[in-house]
Image (cartoon, rainbow, N blue to C red):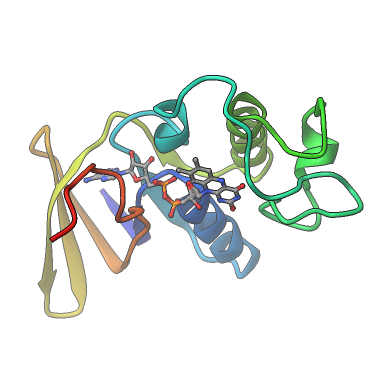
Length: 144
Ligand SMILES: Cc1cc2nc3c(=O)[nH]c(=O)nc-3n(C[C@H](O)[C@H](O)[C@H](O)COP(=O)(O)OP(=O)(O)OC[C@H]3O[C@@H](n4cnc5c(N)ncnc54)[C@H](O)[C@@H]3O)c2cc1C
């Protein structure tokens, strides 16, 4: 498979990158090892976000055009984990983001003018550009 841009990680950063590229007419595919917004799905249920999400103090939405408070009914000024996951689902559907779930990236190589991405199931994907949107604190570790 060949895409102009491969984005690794289907969290807020990956979705937003795909959305912004689309606005510039650039096609991309997002590869996600779990489901869309997997990091958030792994947080405890009922957790409340730290940034406000209501119309008057919105520091949570992924775009001005499709803000969380228009996309999802919110129970308070701070979105819950469940509301934010729902928002990511609505946002990526509305933005028609091409997403491959259950697709773990194992290796990335740079070959001349292109990137080659190898997934856990042995598939190889090629792209002109690669973008890594893996939040770096997704594995617990002890401080050095
Ligand atoms: C308790 C808590 C509260 C927070 N509250 C807020 C808040 O109120 N507002 C706010 O803006 N931020 C908040 N954050 C921060 C928030 O988690 C991050 O800002 C956001 O999720 C980071 O987005 P991201 O896309 O960079 O990373 P992630 O959401 O972690 O996305 C990375 C994705 O990459 C995938 N991935 C990883 N490795 C691979 C691989 N090899 N192949 C394919 N896919 C892979 C993961 O499954 C994951 O879905 C909070 C965080 C925590 C822990």
